[in-house]
Length: 217
Ligand code: SAH
Image (tube, rainbow, N blue to C red; front, top):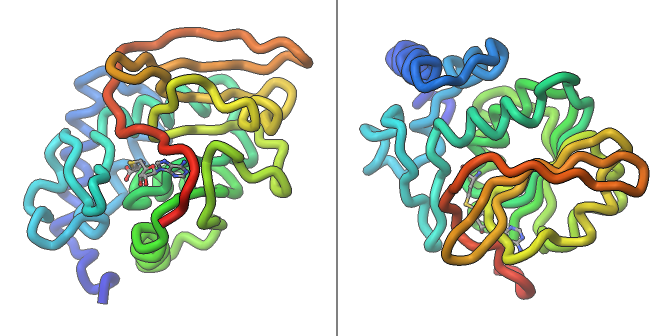
């Protein structure tokens, strides 16, 4: 049972990780609280659980990775800065760890993943954490999730070579999209919608797995 792996020890580890991220410049208290409360070890294969509270990306199988806690916190902070969004679309559920943080920061999260086995495992983790405000879709993130939009915030945790037009069109007016863009070199961007205008701001160089076009697994 996954829920039996959420113990008292992880609470202390989560708090220490949040402290570390605060020292590295994360300031949003809601984000730090969500990090402190999230048992990152349950999102990892058991053999890597001892590294769960290190500030590093780790493999989760299928050639994919759980994002580095700093980048999870940074993207979450950028997503909710100024105005807390009521709904968030996430592309690339992966382990579900980023999803669990978002679920603590908004009313409803919609998350799309192309590898079904990862999605099932992520679902189990969110259930073990008693988070029930996440809807998941096995689908191609390049298409977004049109029937559930528009979204006040969209976060993409895999890198496309260019911004998928469907994601721009599913962004609510005033909403923001956070996305790593590029192939060899990737830049994290925030795109804010103002009617038909999209304002772009570059944040920092990052490294994500590619947003794969096409076939689902
Ligand atoms: N936030 C996740 C990151 C997972 S890595 C975590 O911390 O665990 C990125 C994920 O994006 C992978 O699970 C990969 O399968 C998924 N992905 C890649 N291309 C995709 C696409 N076109 N549509 C949906 N998901 C995609």
